[in-house]
Length: 158
Length: 264
Image (cartoon, rainbow over all chains, first blue to last red; front, side):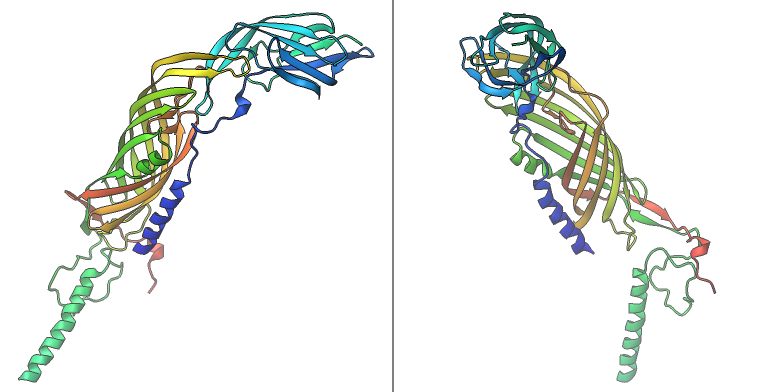
């Protein structure tokens, strides 16, 4: 009987070593708080979600985020070092791009033990040029994760 | 003469060994004892009345949780020291207490973290194991605990890297005091491997009762509980402990239920 206990004790000892994860080593990238934008387009009087064939996005004076990409949603990493960010959206390489300016409030926030700190944003104002964009609709002002759609951009008929 | 001597020796040794066997019999006598009139009554034979009682060893068991040291080797940010103690209050019930101190140092490219705190858990253990002899102290137990911890934590500095924008944001989070309460369910074994020395392990589930994390900041660990970001955690303990047997508990004989008695 005693031997059974000893075996159980030894067995559990090994089991304990593989128990849980080191939380400081794992950063779940889905916890990013990028601005999530959807495209809307008026087609024959009905406004619906749309996909453009060659979308190019970039922040002004920065590297390209998307290049000629076939997509209906775009993500903008708002700047955590300034209270506003400017982005260029081109829905087709042949068409003229539009500049969108976001003004917002920043709040530093602990994301997780592995990721450390990040910034969440509360949108204040959105300004845009109207070469191709008809209007912009803010769905959610607080940008705390990238799952929610924060903004819709409505485009004119080509 | 020699023959008589040898015969006496043999008979008495047989009788003595029988007496010795009788002493090793289970302390709970059978409901219908056999006729014992021919047994030598030398040595102690437990009285076989229905209200009989006897003493079983009690004592204070003091130990340390060894699993914390292994934990620390795998997770350097969890420096935990736990002492465990329990005392027998009835044949099957034990009052249990755990006390501990936790230090949580962490530093990486994103942030540095400092935290420390004390914790205590208080509760009872119930021994499910049927003793094979009255003084057996091996345990297979289930337990219920209430845990409390008071701790503080701070982030002396953090850095947010913004590779796309070029630049970084730095800041700090001030020292914050917090309390945590939780309930703990325990299931485990304790084995007497040497006289008064016990080895044991148990698994436990902790359920947090209050909310510690805030919108701005969640502690990395809650002392005694574990992860600061979870509502419930699973953990295990591996203990080495020593019993100081300074008191005894009287156990009373309860006759078995009538339906279980053999019919004549």
